[in-house]
Length: 535
Image 1 (tube, rainbow, N blue to C red):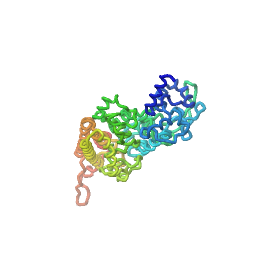
Image 2: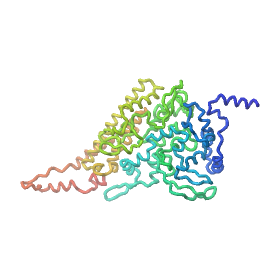
Image 3: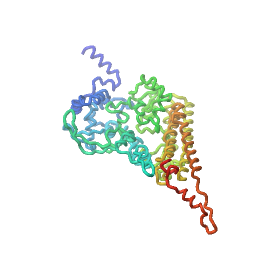
């Protein structure tokens, strides 16, 4: 044996298991057949996969890692997968009988859409945790909630002018798919087969309604929910990509959920932007202070974190709410997190599918209680305390929970103004069996809770810089919208006072002119009528 070979073998023995696999994992014959065509047809896909951990390391070798450093949680992996790289065939022929889009392709039965249940063959814990994540139910939480559907219709639906004003028609499927359901996910439906011209001639492929999509709650063709590729992007499936804030920013950029832009302006975001080139985003577990020096979204909410002594600070979690006591996304008020990921089952006191009442009360039966909130708070604070002193952390939490209280009070003021507008007939809401979102003044109310109160809360929770708490969609705009509601209401009170009590004669008949006043109060909608198209 020559000296070079001896040196390489010695060097490999010194490396961790994952790095000591000097030769790449063998590629199965089935995947080799896929690569034979697709390396020419889709070189971007193939080259991305070639650089991935899936291509380099077989599951058998991944299981040789110490338990805390493993990236797979299953131990009973099928033999046909265990000894080869995780390639095209290993994913696209997996559980093929469970997939409605299964078809014969070059004499092999495959499916197009890989689902979390396919990934669960190796990542069983991660898949089961994600199934308990509110994101995995993102399609139903939006599509099966009639209040949210009404809001959706008035935002992405088509406005049509009618004699009664503007009416909103439901958005078509393509608009829905590229709007709300881009992030929430689409319902995939197999619609039969179609023939396409390809570089290899005519071939038959499944026609899938709702595709393409990588939304977090996508309903897949095996009945499962979610898409691992929403964070671990195809076909590199990188933990580094999932840990970087840009990935979360794809959907959490605001103004309704402004987490990414608030993070970017925070001190944590400042540190990340300045020096993250020297961080190790691939390490498992992720060591605070060594691998990274400021939290990212993944660091706060998901990653397995240890300190420099190797002690566990926070367990890995794909539920993503284990460290969250509050749901600061107001509907319309901030509230404790839901107990279950399916929020379409929630009913408030008025019977509406909302976690809060319009008077600020909560649907407590469906939300976590104070004990669980405290547990989650302590879990998150344990991460903070690795870099900050207790007085700093306690002071931050005091401000954050104060902000939840003050913004909820602000939204209560806005909502009471809106309810008086509805009760006086100046606009039509739920009590009048109408949409509470489709009139201009109702949009002013929505802006207050959907955008500005949310931004103030995110800025507080993430120490996101003063501007997002004040002038950049913060308290300035929130107070302005409340003022607009109040002045709009007062103006209508002056323009359209209630009719005076009729003056009657001895016989009980209205005095002359009283009937005219009553008719005027019931005049049809018009340019000066607050329920008409002019307003």
